[in-house]
Amino acid sequence: HATTTLPAVSSLNALRAFQSRPPGGEVFRGFGAPVLGGKGGGERGLSNYFRGTRADVEAVRDLAPLPATETELKRLAAALKADEGSITLGAAATEAAVKSADLTRARIVAFATHGLVSGELAGVAEPALVFTPPKEASDLDDGLLTASEAAELKLSADWVVLSACNTAAGDGSPGAEGLSGLARAFLYAGARAILVSHWPVGDEAAAEITTRTFALLATSPQIGRAEALRRALVEMIDRGDPAFVHPSAWAPFVVVGDGR
Image 1 (tube, rainbow, N blue to C red):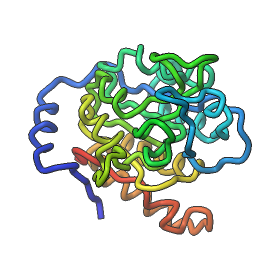
Image 2 (tube, rainbow, N blue to C red):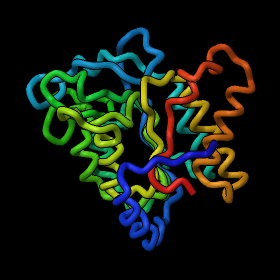
Image 3 (cartoon, one colour):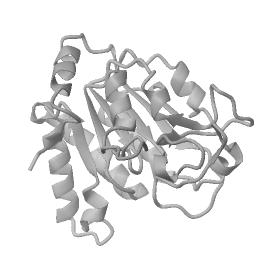
Image 4 (cartoon, rainbow, N blue to C red):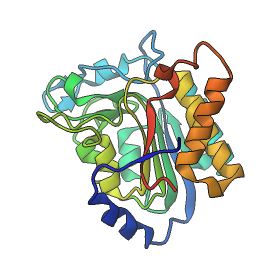
């Protein structure tokens, strides 16, 4: 079934208010494929990378690279007929670049990278997205965009894609509900809908899900976001690939917000 999740009944008012605003004039902005020097990988999340209130940039730099994220963002841009300048990759994909970008005009914003869960972080009780770390940490850029920082972004996006591990997780406070971390932060920042994950996602599986969802929307925009995701997941299951057929691979992503 095509399903959509709301973080709270009261969020209906906010989402409908957002719908009255004109959409941005830019089709797509994507950030990801950070430069990281670790080994192994395969999942888009790890833990324990803080010293005090700033990230330990050397530890962040030791995270495993995610090779599928670059291809994923390029395929998303191609499906949306966006030019190459719409994506920021590699060394340019920094936290500072995200904060300084004018995202108010973008209808779709995507992040393809590692996602860190608040409960796994030593020193800072917030979930975060990973970007190419700077040489030295600062308040502007320590390589991690936390939920509180994401809430300060200025968006007018129809859809924000958080293609990373555990992006639907809570904010880390005692008894926190799901969707209270990164998910709520991006809705607060101005997204009408978000695509988030409930558990660790495989690098290749995440890329397959997001790119096929947007390809389906590009050819049949009337079906809406939730139905496009459903069809992409059914296609993945029907392929019978052992790497993708189990629910652990295809079921983590959900649409939150307006699924139409």
